Amino acid sequence: MGLFSFIFGDSSKESAEKALGLTIAKDYLDFIGDSKIRRYGSELFLGIESSKELSVVKATLNERKNSPSFPSNMYVISPLGIDGILILQDSNGIIYEYIPFSSPRKIYNNLHGYLNSIK
Image 1 (tube, rainbow, N blue to C red):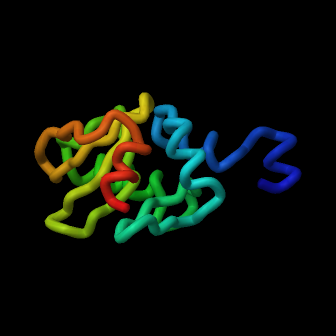
Image 2 (image 1 turned 180 degrees about the vertical axis):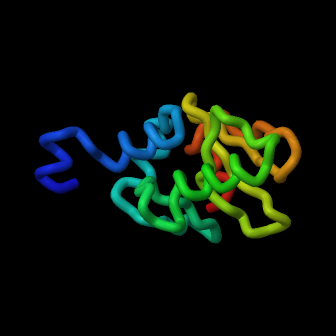
Image 3 (image 1 turned 135 degrees about the vertical axis):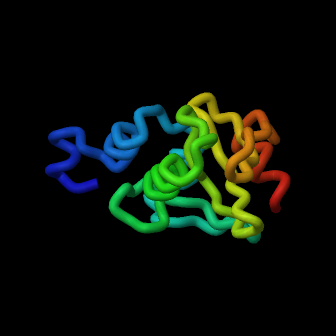
């Protein structure tokens, strides 16, 4: 984060949360850090920066636009690349599996549990 951003509070986190209208869970922010994208095991996790094509913001806004059933209180953290399946997280840190045009299914209580499952 540059000096201008620091002084005026315009961080990637704040910009992303404003664009999505929700709070990003602390465990995801800690995990992703300043990474644009992060690979963990065989999965790709999206960065926070809203100006990048592969980002939490771009992926989430795209899904909201294209899938009426996409939950407004969740965001995309990992596009699995299999049949359009996405891994989502809510502001409380709960992890869900989402198949477009269906309801999300809770799969883990937190990011740590999910990460342990894909090691």
